[in-house]
Structure formats: structure tokens, C-alpha cells
Image 1: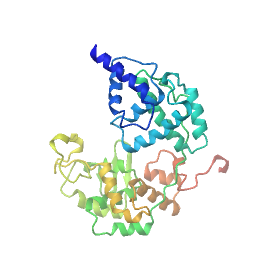
Image 2: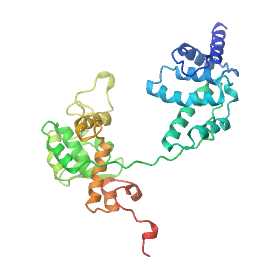
Image 3: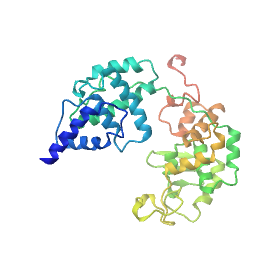
Image 4: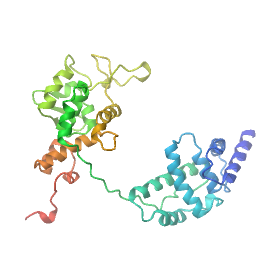
Length: 331
């Protein structure tokens, strides 16, 4: 009884919080609000502003996420009123706010605010304070993909020749460039998947063969020297006992685990900071697309690029080559 009374009291605080910006002041109330939901105490008098304040006070949200969510919820409170009972807020009223505030914005901006609302609505509905379908009238908008700018060929040539690049990174980068394959595919390779004489390797999960050229062919034997099976690209050191990977991701010869995508991405960004005008470094995704762009410039057709890179559709290669439309085809 005491716990239920406490929860009911804290749910009352949600009605009085009123301001979305006071995240620090309502942190304790946010925790208690969650307890109220667990106790099944739905309160029809919880206000939009009070619930928004508790939502933003959650300790699991990063500073950037709070800043983004606050923009959305502050605009809702401004249009609908901070004192408005949350249970009276409908998807129709929310849609009117979105149309007025972000109706003419880019798709990415609209989708960001929509995602913030959906997160808030789900959280509030779990506590019995709001309808779960507050975003039901808001359709996700398409986001045109920006063209990935290729890395200049001469800059890549200088990267291959840098003496400070370790063998593992040098091999991975050359493999990704020459095969135009996704980094995840290359990192999933095992030593036993390699066909060194044929200059190819099988990505078994995808049923696709990665093919490379002389640059990678010269490096791979050095990388796998003395190893007959296990992950091709290995982490820097052995894993600790509390973070032991699956047997398939552990090298039986060295005891080291498989190199992660996150680590590989970080190393490439760090090494290519001077190639990026913004100084943040290049991504492995951009390295792959650079190869496709260069081959397109050299006259490769879309089907040829698709065969090399493993793309599932010719249409996904439109930014590298001109894909004929049905009207262009002569019967």
C-alpha cells in the first residue's frame, strides 16, 4: 500500500512538471513515474508538458538525443499547451502540429521529429498516460540519398604506398577497393575461404565470390602466413575471459578474435583524415563506392559492376553509370 501511494504521488508530479526543459529537476519524478506504470496506476490528468519533462529526464538518453527530442516536444507543447491532458492529445491534433511546423521541411527533418514523437508516444503508452498511435497519421517521408563523393585515385595510390600502414590494414583496404565489396563481407572471410591462385574468396553467407587484383594478391599470403583456418582479419590482441567471441570468430592459431567493423572503420578514418576536407576521415563505405565510381569512369557497364560488387539490382548502381530506362531500349 505504501509503495502504491508513493507511485500515485509521483504520477501527480507528472501533472505538475509542466516544462519540457526542466530535465534535471524532474529526473527523480521520471523514475517514480515508471514505478507508477509498473503498479498499473494510469492517471488521466497527466499533462503533456509534465510527461515530456519526465521523458527527457531519463538517464538512458544521451545529451544529443535529449537536445533533438526536446525540439520536437517543445513545439508540441507550444501548439497544444503544456497543461493539456496527455490522454486528450490525439494523432489528428499531432498531425496538424507537424504540418504547420515541418510540413515543408526536408524528408530527413520530418522523419527525425516523427521518430522523436514515436519514442515519446511509446514510452507514455507503456505507463497508461497516452495513446500509442500518436504518430499514426504521420507517414515516413523518403530521404533522397546524397551521392557519395569518390576518393581521388592519386590519393589512394599514395595511401597504398605509405610505410606506416600495418599489413592488416593495407590488405583489408586493398581488398575492399579492388573487390568493391561491402566491408562486412570482407571481414566475415575465413582463411579457408580463400582461393589464392584464383585471386578470389567465397562469402558463404551471401553466395558471392570476392575477386581482387595484383595489389591484394601480393599482400594476402603475407597476412595468412602460418594460418590454415580461422578469421582472415584478426583483432589486435586476444579477448578477455569476459568477452570471449564465438568459436567461429576465434583464430585457433593465435587465440585472437575477428576484427570488428567498428575497429576497422575507426582505423581507416584515422589514416585518411588528410584526405577528407572536413578532417573526419573517410569511411569504408566510401572506399567501396570510390572503386565503383572509378570503374564506371573506365567504361564498365552496370551488369559488370553488379557482378563484381554483389549489388542485388542494376538500379542501385545508377550513380556510377547510366542505367537505361525502358523507353531507351530498342525493341
